[in-house]
Amino acid sequence: MSDPLRTKLRVVLLTALALLLSLGLASGFKWVQGGQATTLAVAQTPASPAATLEEPDPLATASPGSFQTLQDVSRAFVSIAETVTPAVVSIDTRGTPQRPRLPERFEELFGPLQRNQPEQAPFDVPLGRGSGFVVSEEGYVLTNNHVVANAERILVELPDARRFTAELVGRDPTTDVAVLKIEGEDLPTVTLGDSEALAVGEFVLAIGNPGTEFASALPFTVTAGIVSAKGRTLGIIRQAAAGSEYAIEDLIQTDAVINPGNSGGPLVNYHGEVIGVNTAIQSLTGYYQGYGFAIPIDLAKEVMEDLIEYGRVRRAALRVYVSDVSPEDAVAYRLPGARGVVIQDFPDDSPADKAGIRREDVVVAIDGKPVERVGQLQRMVASYEPGDRVNVTVIRRGEELTFRVRLAEANVPQPEPAAAEVASRPATMLIGVQVTDLTPELARRAGFDPRTELEGVLVTAVARWGPASNAGLRPGWLVQQVNGEKVSSVAEFDRALSEIEPGDIVSIQAVSPRGEGRLMRNTFNMAIPEE
Image 1: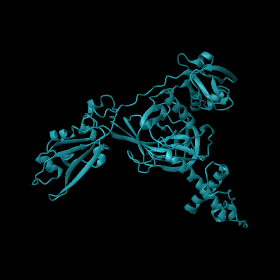
Image 2: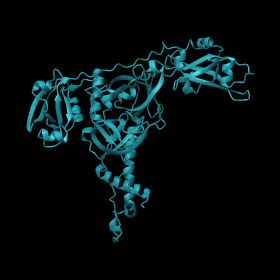
Image 3: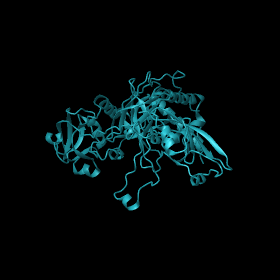
Image 4: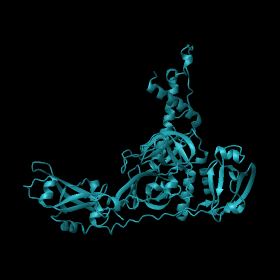
């Protein structure tokens, strides 16, 4: 039986040596210890009959110089992580939780959902966490659309602990790309690479903030893997874009560990260049199971530039309905192989139709560049501007034809950003609590000694992840003072909060029963969200 640790070390050593050959020690990063790579030296020993049945063990035969090589490769990863991580951000989105969409007549038949919840949803509770990265000194941040889609406020934190309230520049559900802007000085930035030149098998690093549902327990985590495949289509972006025909999925697949919270973070090649935006995992559990996916940076960059320049996406389009070529299509249409995109139909006013392209033509190239799949065709066309003219090469029943097509502008849905109206919310919503007047029965049920004379208002509900919840206040606490002012009724509680404004700190003094008539006193300080 083989030793699992030795097997893992063997894989690491062989992998590192392969990486070293591809790096050529010329990645552009300064090595901690300079010098040329040390050649792997294998001890020359006579081969025994048993040895011929197994591959050589690198750990048993490698010289000390081999481990120096591994150390150099390790330092390369360290250099990449140290270069990129300072520009990776943690994104915290806030807003009003959306009630789940229920089937038609659900509440009519089964009653309202969450009967005991207040009718008004608490404001400014965390909606989720994600990642992003700073792409320019002006403070532009690239992330995923799904990270910020429902946010009314977006908070950004850098690894150096600087925090910013970010402006949403724009977002595009059809590519799952969004752009934010923060105002700061000496902002670290990443270098964008060329995802088109990326090859399957290349080493990559994923950087982001995996963690729990609403908080990153493991901020700014670096994981390593390889590019497992290119051109993957999952259907998730199209689904998120409400089935838009202009949704583009041409994803990079990697085995670098990606978990919830990593969304929007960079996928980095061994030159330290960002070649993808981590966006999804394929999992039965919701956590990493070996398959992660990233948006190619070439596509994300084009969307980002449109959002910055125009505030919306300007997408070029052939205006065709297409499908990938199947093996049966390849035979029916007399193709050299099962590659290309079949034209199935045209919407009204299609420039491809006007140029002479017909149903069942198979697109095999755009301006001479080969087309193998739908996602690739969509991404290639999206790299042009509306109004550009391109050469579309098709195969029509075995005959190759080329058509000159003037690209139209796609009718891409433009989502409206959510607006945060902090000042108009009641103070109890701002801090996220519900209280009620104290009665002897409520005091008994809450665990207070009936012989103890108490004044205050009883907390009956606390919005999950709201300011009060984040400060530690829970149902069952008896609030006795607000900002030093005694309260003995709901009316007094509301009055004590009536003068607070966005950005203020509210101090609540409360007590909780601890048995045998004893009380625990605590002060909860919470920040009112700013506009």
